[in-house]
Structure formats: structure tokens, C-alpha cells
Length: 234
Image 1 (cartoon, one colour):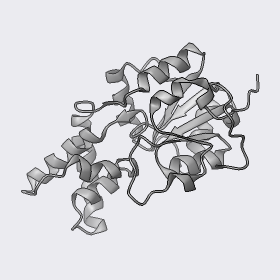
Image 2 (cartoon, helix red, strand yellow):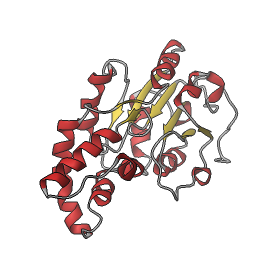
Image 3 (cartoon, rainbow, N blue to C red):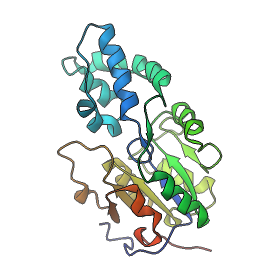
Image 4 (spheres, helix red, strand yellow):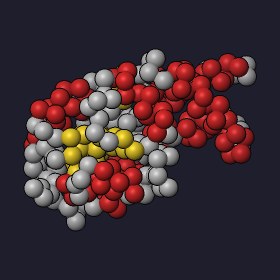
């Protein structure tokens, strides 16, 4: 845990910010369909969900690397634009919110908590996700990986999200399934929750990320006491 921020349950925060892929949305099936279209076009064998799922939160380059492990870095990077074009066609066709996410969001909204998304996914792709889930009028702020000059693990995306909502970082809580989510939150002075239901490589150690809390499933966060204490500046 981060020793500089309180970790006791303090009720729902004024603002809850979430990573998208692997935290709110189980989007791995969309990415598998994307990778398999690319592989099929090259006469290669498909990847499985188990192959690709651990890499989703690491971004498009990591997923291309998992699908084409024999290619060097330059060759893999050259495939990223194609990956993103195909992914936009597959986006939302196979993905769905994780079980418990809608109950969690409804509980936050009922308590008057605003919520938003801070993701490293390109903003235009993240925005395309919202209507399919009915989130376009509910999500109070959206910061993508290309919205600003920096992306996670830099704290700037979280700082700007808080600024746009008129609150301090200490009044927010950030929830994410990757170490860079927690690193960004810690650098921003924002309490955080490690989403253990998300996408992780075998060697990842969430205990070492120093989040204020760790949760096994989204439904836990429908309860106010599951949230770390955020500062109430009201």
C-alpha cells in the first residue's frame, strides 16, 4: 500500500476514475478477433483468448507482439496501424462489461459520485465504446492515450481528468488493472484500487504496486466501505 495516503474505507469518493480495458470492459475477445484477422491474412495460425488476454492492458504493441512473436520490434511496430484499423471494425462486437460493473456504476451514481475513464487506448476508439454500453451520457470525463502530451504511467492524464471535473486528485480514486495505472495514481497523489479481475501477465505482482486497496471483482466496489478514503474538500 502507498504509505502517503490513507487506506481505510471512507465511503464512495466524489469522483471515481477507471481504466477501460481490463477494468470496466472485458475487451479481450475484440482484440483476439482483430489479431486473428491479421494472422489469417498472412496464412498463420490463430491465437487463443488465453494467448492474448494477459497482454491486453499492455497496449496494441504488446498484443501485436504476442500475436507475431517471431517478428522483430520494428516489424511488429509496423503492424500496429493495421491492428488499430481492424480493431475499430471489431470494437464492441465481442466485448462486454465485466460482471458487476453495471451494479458498481449504478451504486456510484445513486450516491452522487461522478465517474470517468482514463485509458491509454486512443481517445477516438475509447469514445466509440461508450454508446454500445450506454455510457456516453454517464461518463463525466474521458481521457485517452493520445488526448494529452503524456499517457500513463505519467500522472498528467489523471491530473487533467480531475481538473476537468473541478476536483483535486486527492478527492478522486483511480481503479486500474495494470501497474502503470497505480504508478500514475501514486504520482498524481490520487488513492487507487488494483482491479485483480483484469488482465495481468504471470509475473505481475499487484502487491508490489502499492495501491491503497485490491479488489477481486467489480461487485465489491458497489459497497461504499470497499473504497479507500479520499479527501473531501467540500
